[in-house]
Image 1 (tube, each protein chain N blue to C red):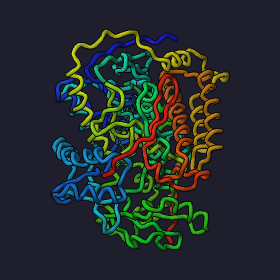
Image 2 (image 1 turned 135 degrees about the horizontal axis):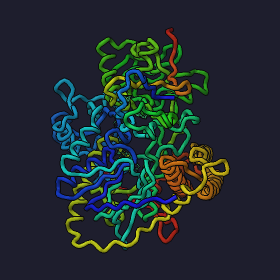
Image 3 (image 1 turned 90 degrees about the vertical axis):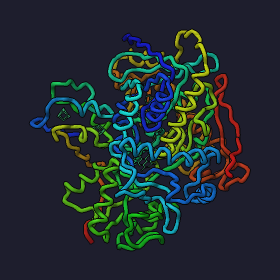
Image 4 (image 1 turned 30 degrees about the vertical axis):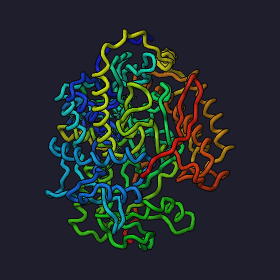
Length: 552
Length: 73
Ligand SMILES: Cc1cc2nc3c(=O)[nH]c(=O)nc-3n(C[C@H](O)[C@H](O)[C@H](O)COP(=O)(O)OP(=O)(O)OC[C@H]3O[C@@H](n4cnc5c(N)ncnc54)[C@H](O)[C@@H]3O)c2cc1C
Ligand code: SF4
Ligand code: SF4
């Protein structure tokens, strides 16, 4: 099997046209760079924001008050505090209103009924900082803004490795997901916006790999590429999980305005007793194990019960669910002849579907530790507004650095071990002697769920690392792909193996319990380890560094 | 499983196939009714439904993904 090669040149290559990537493209193009966006899907409906989101975390002076410092202080002590450096948090939130105004001007409705509407992700009495916005058509609008500024969008190309010239990142190689072609991109710099690392852990329906809480086509490709190129990675050992409707994972929880109740109708938490669209039921934000505890103590299941919302309240909630891209579940109930306003919907934690709290360590300027490499959004963690703000910032940093570059060195032959492996995989017969990507993906999920889930221990993590390495060798030797689509899925499997191994490595290094990184052999939180755990590859070895974080 | 195409309504434009982030309709050729090649890779994002100019696509939620609910108390 031969793969034809297609060459591309630009000032900036953006890998992943999600929220972050499109914002980078828009900003870099308007600052004068020649920009190419490569996406494995179609940017119009790709990524976690495909058909909408509805909560935009932000600071709006006319709503929150003019004292940004006081507001940040409160933010940092509240539920939303993160492990990032204070400079990062300040940049994110101080620039969030600028992006809100831009999006509104571009046609993404950021106001509701003429006002800033804040709701969800908060307790009664708390400051609210999630703006309700109507994101249903956001991707199409951002795509148009990028094209209008001259950015070139190449859909259905999955990037698999970064290219370097000395210490500088200068492009990438990718494969077409629709025909047998290799794409070589040469650029002055590369911005990564490939989203989260999903499909690594078993979901709530393991037989269905794509029933995921977040975008199942985002599998940590950016993390794997950046790590292979030598970038600093952080906080991969801290897992997070979410909750939502039983068995239908993509519906989330934050937009539901009901009360979580037991089968007899008693509220399970102390915060709300009547449905309230302003807060939803925040009990799960502070007590994530509640569903498991109810089940295991014979008090479950737990239902999201919106009974008591008036007609207007149900319409309000439905409006936001539609804008969050949740028409699938709404249509299901409609076809069942049921009203979600009066049907208790069973909820659960997707407690095995873990994703890492961190990823590529990028700073307040969206720069990574490698020259010429920028990253934003769920390449670390942070939701829509984080992706939008740092995508924008990445465009500014790239424009500044790339314009100062001068003449770029002659390009040498692209080197990519991943590409060599993919050529071999595509060359194998797709028969029962060889493995499918699904088989490998399930094997990875089993190992990650059983050996690097919750809780953890050195013995299990060590065994998990050895087991995963064996599966990796088997995958490299026996995966086969019958067409370009399957080849891209095989490439995803190789990246899942890379990110899985990295998580196992990091989890062994953090010898304490912190958040949901629960170590049975170190059952306490060590105040001396309140630091970022940074991993990087140097000369084929994984180096580990503990780095202090300035929180104030 | 997931997307169901009503061939009698379909205009064979393949806009649904272009929209799908998972390429569930891989191999579809404009001018013909799209093929649902990889139904297991559907994320139920609804993009194909939104994009269809003829109301010819609907999603069927497979049994093992069905939301569970409490019958009226
Ligand atoms: C149903 C749902 C509701 C949500 N609601 C909210 C909300 O209300 N508020 C909030 O803050 N967050 C919400 N989120 C999370 C939010 O959508 C994400 O945090 C956000 O989209 C991240 O943006 P991103 O640009 O980093 O990644 P994404 O938007 O996921 O984009 C990643 C892009 O990279 C592409 N890609 C991946 N790998 C490659 C590769 N190797 N080569 C080329 N391209 C690649 C993908 O196709 C995709 O286009 C929600 C998520 C879901 C699923
Ligand atoms: S619902 Fe989304 S993932 Fe499923 S076929 Fe339609 S566009 Fe593709
Ligand atoms: S978008 Fe609708 S009309 Fe066009 S091919 Fe798909 S199902 Fe048919």
